[in-house]
Image: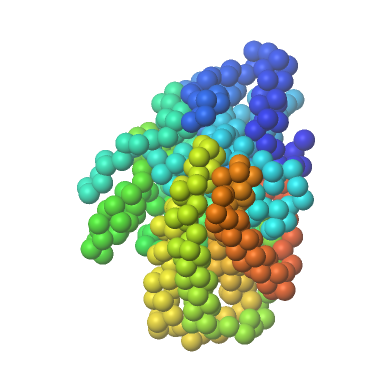
Length: 444
């Protein structure tokens, strides 16, 4: 049961079975509904006023967290459940973005390859993501346009007022890492050890242009709140709306409203031995940055070529969600050419990179454009199949996107040997990190 990624129908069926078989051991609270009317539920185990809230699928292309929740529920209801609860009441949301998970369903049922994943992947625009639309009111910026899914998440926070909150993200590739909403020096070495114990590489190169990110160990960073991101940008003379025109994230919201410690444990869908390869890559940092800049410039030109036409043809709710997601990539992807240009000009840009240094970012600046090309191809295909492509514009976009994505997949196959990380490994790392944080909080 815990060795495969699960879709929304399987998760719902498991909840109904739990409701029948667990009797009075669980409580199920309806928190709200998705934008399409699907229920969002919270499963609670244990009593008391010391609460832990665990939320799966904050990004719908990151479904492993739902399996982590299933594993944790089984463990807390098992023969040693009372001990496993550690004196806390536990509250679980299997998938906060249920409609987004539905739009990822196809690749969950196929072999986990880059082609299958990218051909069917969906990740919503930031202003439609549950974990980026908490309300915020800070200097220069007010956001109140919470999604229905986010409103349900807010209700979970209000009902539980958790001491500990886990938002179960994961990444496509690049090693595993943790993020905390505040520094917890006693917890950091334990989190480092969990990743090493499972044989994955600790990744400390996560970087988003303009974010004030603080790495406190080889695998642990302090996740900035939206307030901190906006403040850092404004200190550089940027307008708040340019820096972060969205809401607060769950880590900042929980910390600010309830003093909640949030832990995010990112585990990858794929691993590769080159992440641990210290041999020369043949690239300098300048060459890598220039290569990345070219990739994002090409992606921007592709979007310019096709999106206006596709925007006039979309009609169904799912098509509109895909178009918004691609439009969001246009917005944030447009920042990357100048970001990489700055890295080309950095004082240390002529340093030689090992394969270990080159490979994660080398994959990133290929996978992100591949996702953009593939999402446009998928959107165009939906329009073609609906019979609305009278001038052949959607077919042209589909062919162009699929061709460009395929060229990247072929290049990636030459560059590395990416292997799927077992679901058992992904979920074990997340589960152990949450329990480690609970143990630390119990120590006072």
